[in-house]
Length: 236
Image 1 (cartoon, helix red, strand yellow):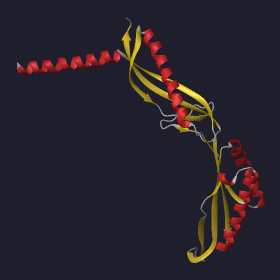
Image 2 (cartoon, rainbow, N blue to C red):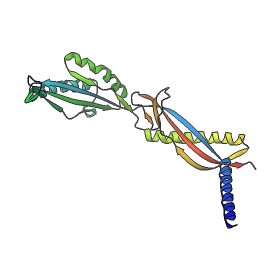
Image 3 (cartoon, rainbow, N blue to C red):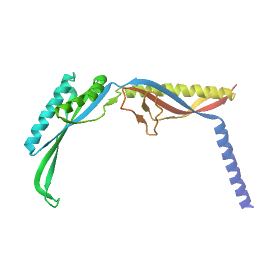
């Protein structure tokens, strides 16, 4: 008898629990809000590398210095101030001479030297243009490796806050419409979750669970999504 009574109490608790979950579910609504804004990058970054080869370290260094100075002069001619230009540490590679059997010896055959030069500027149009034009230095015999330019948004934190506010308003409007169609009204906010910010090129549908940050274009679109859960109250 005691066992039957205990089983009955457990069954009643389970049924009440399911009823509570169903009622709570019926009295709440989950909606997504979306907002986007066209933004323009205000920081540009361009990187190129000057490489040389010499039979001795002194020869290679002299060649590198001449090539680097020519690149620096070219960038200054494009109206970039010295403060915007940074030369990185020289990378040195010793290449050993090989014997007749193809084995490395202790003798150095030549030296490869590489130095990266970076330009960072608020003049994003100039960064874009120089990344396309600097290849003309190759005609002068300078061995250049050119990386694609990158463009960033310095006001991203403020942009994110603005988009979250707009997305929240959008979600609330959706909740109101759904609630009214269900003969109810939106009550208190139960939970809120923000999605990752997506920064894409214009007219792009790219998304990622970790967020997208397009650095290849100057003109971009910032997008934000929020997920909100509201209580739904009956109309009085």
